[in-house]
Image (tube, rainbow, N blue to C red):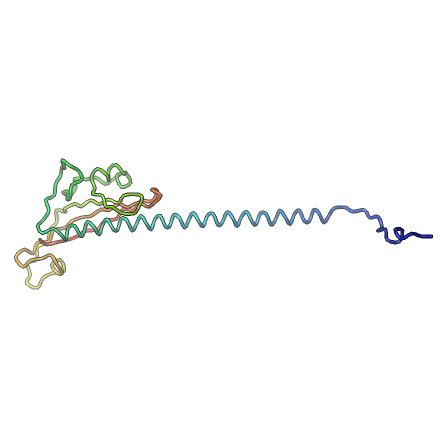
Length: 187
């Protein structure tokens, strides 16, 4: 008589492990896709951080630039430009006194010759004001675009030009932005 286990015993097969190989290859493909996704996300985070740092640098340099323009505008009389300064930083330098050629990124140069602007940035923004040798005198009776706005008087229509150079840095200290503007004012 046959027993129960004889009827339900599975037949013996020769298994070759091909399904195991397929699963291992699929796991390898999924792991590679996961690593690529993580690498891409990490790269995007670094790019975003660098963009933010550059934006902070630009904003701090622009704020220093505007502060220098406001300082010039607030002067009742023409400030005296100097070519040598006994107690740095001086307010206004004469044109050509300061050489910027390789000093745009040198923080020692900026802390020696420029005026600091206090900001929330980790890197202190600075600005330098230079009086340019060019002036403009309005001799017409109709006026000129240099004379429009505030700052001019009817007795003196000579506009004095100032080059303002500002340097700002981001929070990481690796992003540096340098901006320049020319500002004209009649006193």
